Image 1 (cartoon, helix red, strand yellow):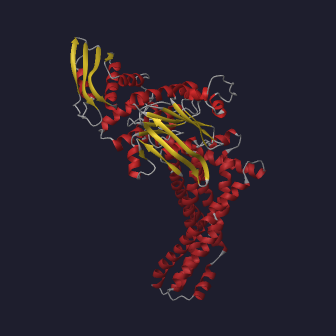
Image 2 (tube, helix red, strand yellow; image 1 turned 30 degrees about the vertical axis):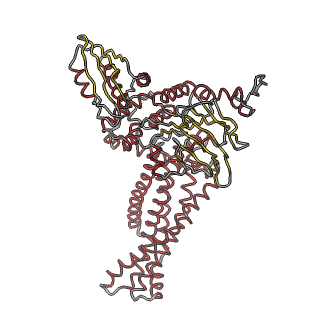
Image 3 (tube, one colour; image 1 turned 180 degrees about the horizontal axis):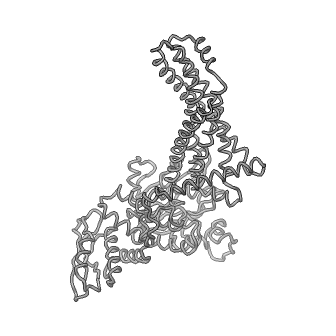
Length: 260
Length: 373
């Protein structure tokens, strides 16, 4: 990957462990500004755990995570909160507050971190919901809408503050192919218009090939990353059979005659 | 980076066409114009048919601009005005396209509920009929259990017995000793006026056995176990666990409710006996400090002790256990599927069980008065 822009997120020698059980060790990779970066790997390899480390929900056993060149792991919790203000995050099951309406969900970050007036916030909420195709759903509770709509509502909350980095944990899991495609398009459009960097955990191959610009593959057996690069390139040129197999949906890779 | 004041200009092109020229920075930190200003300007021009938004004078922009544009778009759509844009920044153009791709959803009217509706007679009747239906289902499930055709698991029953019983010892001990002491103080002060301090023992024994021991235990259990039942079942509802149980062909009443009810019905009388004992001891502690010797207290208390008093207390404990368990399980099973709904279910469980307890207590007292026990 040749990209001259400075890395937005850098992972340095990251080792993740629960107690003495190591999940992944020696992870080293950069995520560039404007990338759609996919973290892939088989079930149980630690994809979501890596994301939680990047979000600061779990402290790494060893190593560092840098945002814009500054260490996040060693930052004070106030500094971490300041960094987090520029993030939008959607969790695996949405993470919408079930006791609040969609409007109240989106209102929360706007009220906390902006100086918009009440009526301006209402306008922004209407706009964010319209962006994800949920115009008019302000007064609905998360339990009153479908799973796909909930995912989109979570995205609306994530983009409330026009974030620099968007994190997604399995955004299209449990969605039908059409909704999942629409969500992918939405992610790309958000990324382009906000100029954001996107980090997502997913194993939806169509999404990976459609939108990802860079990726890593975490291996559950060797407990480290064994692939790093554009997924299409990895599918055709990786020297790891597992990675090729993963990206080809388990079909044994054909012997390629070209150079690796 | 200097910021320029944001604003817009309306330039009429022809009688039915207006250009809306956006100027300056439209960002969060900037005092951006409100849509209401434009709204009234547009409304005053009845012949308006075309609105052209020009963005060539725009500098910085963020969601503030987008929210404004979306409102313009929606206004134009509602008033049959042709909405066009030119020279908007690329991102803004694209975002507007995405935001206007789906028409706004209109919430159906009947979905909005006023609080008046929730206390209407029809709803109260509905509450009672559904309560009766629940009790009926429980009765059917119990009959099935007796017939040996039930899906109730003994393992669950044992767990619930442990959770409701031994785990509650500490709090029950504290409450009943203190209640015994309170009764003794209350009685001692009044009886001392007649020089009849020794009858404090009678007062404590009768008061604890018939009333306070069982009632305090029930209130503690309603707050502790009843609320836990509602929260457990409510969370299971949220996690689709109850749906899973139903689709496995198992009745949630048999599987979830019956073991809880049976556990409480078994444990409550035992807890009541324990609470009675500690309550009488608590009364003894106070009596000891009031020049009544322990032997005198024990003798007097022994005289007041009767099987009638004990059994009235125990019958109450069984009735209370049923009420608490039914109120808790019903609130849980009927809970909504959000975190707030689970909280409401727990609250409802405690409030209804305490109301049930007091009513049942009064009823049992009146009945025992009538039949002379």
